[in-house]
Length: 86
Length: 540
Image (cartoon, rainbow over all chains, first blue to last red; front, side):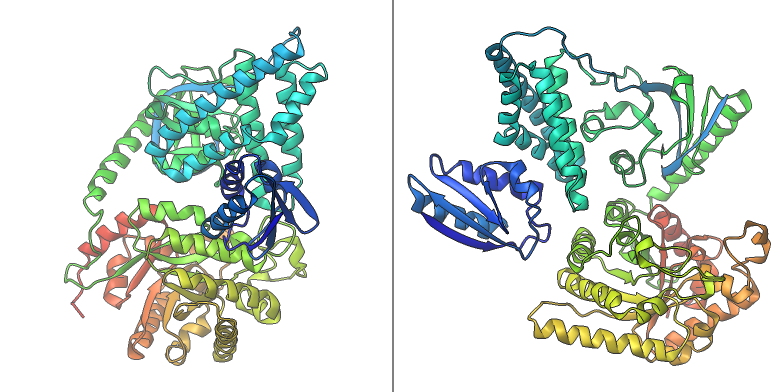
């Protein structure tokens, strides 16, 4: 299992559009399970509504775990996605 | 003739046949197939809804810009959400029809968003409902898409975001909605399209038939249905006059603002929210001379956070694409407040704990706003000005606080810009000591509305005092000249952001006094640019 943490830079936080892009990026990881934890809640990063409902804001820390097939590649792609988009 | 009144969101006069838009009640099916069949129907309807949204998205992006299209992109993604899809499929497996399942699930998800502790997320419940309704309509073989054969006035209870983007825009002369606010989708769209429209209008839709003649007066907020002959004649003349005036003003678009003798004048705008930025650009404003910063504080239950303020200010700064913005710090008093401020009722709120007085008495409130403004200044040219100043010590205290906050942010490694500081001149005291104040700040902006009421001791809210509240009173003109002279003697600039700045009959007087900036509502920019261009002053 690979774990990444990311501090949200986007002033709008994890709002609808970044949440949608994040869900798409996670879905691109194929069979690898991608979960996102914020505070004490963990959601499937492939699901936009669950991500939006977290209400994560700028400055909040997100923890992403990738587990399963090609987890190294998945973690690397999630990391670069987060750096660029959130 | 039926007459109604609403909140005008764009000036102009429109006359045309009525199109009454009713959101029909959906008849959900009474009989349906097996779970497997309903699942398939849902999958097909979802794909069809997404295809519709994709087409709409492309059209919207091309016609209205990416900003308006974004909401559709989010809706497309919501339809692919596994939580949503699985909840629907579970209901179908439990015996529901596809239509019932989508309807119920949409409502359930919408309620979760509606209960979130974030204004932006709360508003997303509309999107969940909207996208669910689209799927349900497809499943029921129902279409709410509107067609209009001839141009007309669209009257509706309210319009959802997806309804507003799929309207036949080339056919719409005006909107009249019974619900909505100055910031509702319909109002924003009306401004973007530049058509006279009313929201929150008190018209009885059931008394109006499609095809009835409707007149919408976007100057006064009046609308007339089945007008009598004299009203029709009067409004037709008003429409022609407005059209001629508008065309004549178009010649001033994109031009520099200079007096006849060639002196450059800054022609800025007064706005009250980030949404108004598009109006500034659309009307060719050169910047924002007054950003009323109350919008984030009113109409809610708790103080806005520094992040919320920063996000909104940054949105304004970035939206202006390099044009300057002057933020007026919080101007709230007992007559204009939100409950959570818990201000005591005052006998005389106009002379009470308001504007900078309130901010100085609540340093934490002020600090939060100042930090947000400084942080936003990293993204473009930002100035700040303080309302309700009467004494030198107030300016000195405010400046000291600004200095502390600058230092704090710098120490935290936060990027900030150079933020010129100014004062509003709106008390007679500030006008009289303007020679002293001019050495303390970078600019003056005269709030003529308050300066008039305080100088003439005439309450501007009291309609019975109309003729006593005269902004052209000799006492006012004397003060205005003094303020301009004080500013120029100290080498700073001075402007006017009150209503007097938008009075074209006064432009020549103000230019002769030497004012360097006028700030008016966006719709008045071209009118005042014309007046400035025609004013005769000696080049300085």
